[in-house]
Length: 376
Image (cartoon, rainbow, N blue to C red):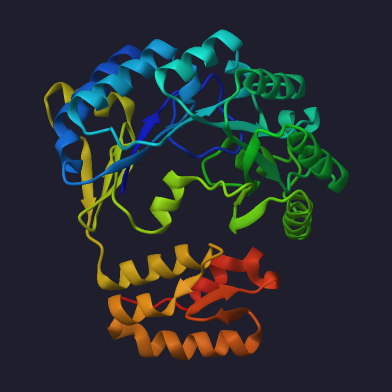
């Protein structure tokens, strides 16, 4: 199994917390689409030996494109790669882009899974995060998508904003759960990243600071409310209902190959990590010269081990001890020793040959994983 990720680096406006690569200017959009076609042409053969099962349009805001532009990208992929086995094509979308005609056209183009960036149904939250849509547009977007009959819909929510009370968070979950075709939810704590407007506004005293105690409490509140409604917590930030998981993202967690296209996109091919340049103009200029706009990161055995531990521990499947034995024998003794301490502390528990986080440790997944890391 392999996947394709396409980064669409444009947004209508900048959310205050976002540190992903994007531009709010669309003046390079047409040049970007031509460059993307060239990148597909130059790199399409990299997945020739793989069965491609998922395609994911991320960003940025992919729904800023027209259905014809999305269809053109899919046609370019189909011309250069084998897509007969593709079962999941996801498009990230913002509520203010949703209209019946546009999203029916996306459906006809082949999009069969939507990831809708709601974040909250409350105006206070949306203003704090500088989101482009209103709470009413969030509800209307779900109503339109429901009417169109999309079978697989994921909603993004953000918890832990200083503006979000526990009651507001529960209300967000209730509103999502009212739509039976929403069978997946991704939930993220509001983080304050360097070089973001939110960081600067907090520093200047113009926005309230994030409260860690509130974030921990709301993580578990959200988990409880979603599990009451039959959502399964299968990864720290992801919940699925009726057996739904993001097949594309799950492939990342199981180290399956994927090709990333577009500025800032990452790839994982033949145990090599590749990253595209995170600059729209440079990306376009390099591809105009038929140069591949990426650089390679060499993963050492230590890098691979640490990454596996970090990612696996975040999932409901946990760390496979047999995987450590077969793939990282040089670290097995250290791993078993550290694992034993964490089991004794109650931070981990073991089911057959899989080691998992205790409920109390879920919110501290990355810190627990670091206790199992080895140094280069």
